[in-house]
Image (cartoon, rainbow, N blue to C red; front, side, top):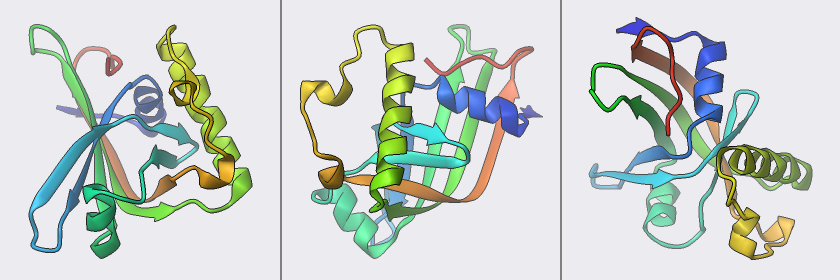
Length: 150
């Protein structure tokens, strides 16, 4: 497998519909859930409700890993990216606005039928937005050309 440079990692993340957010509960049990996400610079944003299993786990341990992959039908070509860090709340309205715009731009480009917020209107201050404070990002591929995760 070959490493992927940062520019290619960014493009790969921008073209991926879903990532898998991994975390560990207080007893050390892993928990992984597929989630949409967006990127602005080196920051990854996710909409994570403040209730439920994810929220409970994150209150005890906010260290996460976001895994994004692409696998060809023949399974000879594949690529994956790992984003590791701490998942923290985004409270700043300006940052929330940037993240919302990045999310809408990404998903309207990738999905012609995309409807921001599933046609629900969530006030910016009520948006349960979190970001990964980056500690490590890496990618590998087994492919002549890096492809997108779809």
